[in-house]
Length: 130
Image 1 (cartoon, rainbow, N blue to C red):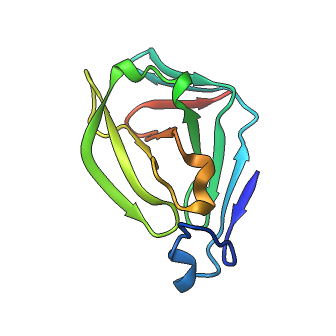
Image 2: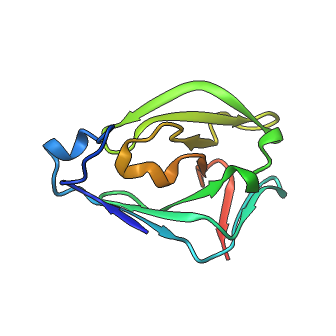
């Protein structure tokens, strides 16, 4: 689907590659059924997930919002910043742990494929790729 690195230009390019041109991020179709559960309840299930592979990090599944029980999540005030992807917004389970998922709602150009997708922390919820 996409691989990001130096040389990708646009209206909103990621500044991270200026300092670290060797850093790589690949966004690929996951080609698996990804399920997210909390205490046995299915919070998300998708066959349209993307798999992000990034230098120095374990692979992460990003799921479309349409496949997530967004009614079970509440937007958190927590944010973090990545010089390759942009600012991440966080979501907490209304009746569970805080900041279980994150989303790049306005990602840099190179990470446009992540817009409107959420990823979940596997140490806070159960994430299965079947």
